[in-house]
Image (tube, rainbow, N blue to C red; front, side, top):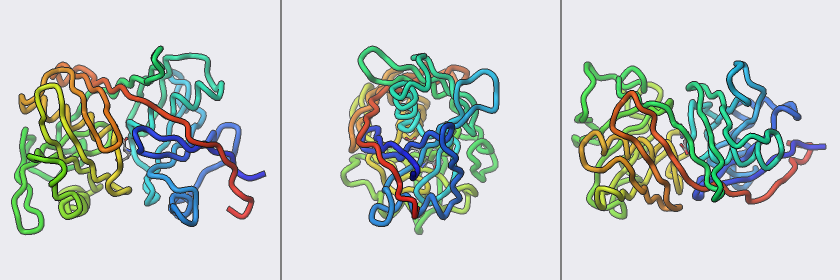
Length: 279
Ligand SMILES: N[C@H](CCC[C@H](N)C(=O)O)C(=O)O
């Protein structure tokens, strides 16, 4: 009997989801990379593990691995799929699902319309939270990259995000600046890179070059980070639709750094499978 898994996605950001409570599965980075391969493996942007919690105030531990094998602190689209998975599979009958991540506690809510709402916690702007090697915290930073100076915002949602404002996401230099900023020396743990176009105060278009996965069709923490930084820059209101190539997310934040950010969006099942024993 090989490892059973589900293939799910949040707006095309796709995941292999494994119940690692009823199955023994603790993959190393090489195994994750092999399973992530879209020809030799299952194929995914991230692997999500459902594990027993290590703290009392949550129902599950939620672990996330990028396609390059790196374990990371948060994944917004993955959190919605995680909630769908544990509820639909009967691992919980609660529709308010507190989970433990490497970045702390998230609370996932399954809504009547099938969407999932996530309390993403408070945004953290302090450079050390990303980490980002700059002397002081600023609302905007000038970053030297590929021989040019680009203006970015920087925020942690448990995982690190840099964001640039662009006039058009369609023309954004994602292929050039994405990898260059992702691995910029001032981001010692690398960084996710968002390219945001402000349509109006309630609508943003976004593309994200993800740390450890490349450009994805959607990024939940990236959409959250973009809204938060644009709200801090005074360019959007408290409720924003973020349109990514794979679809829309709703992000809500009051602008108060002590207040949590809320992300709402869909989570879809695609198929279930079982690895052949050789894997
Ligand atoms: N690439 C991210 C993890 C996945 C985030 C993304 N898929 C989301 O929906 O938030 C990182 O290395 O921090």
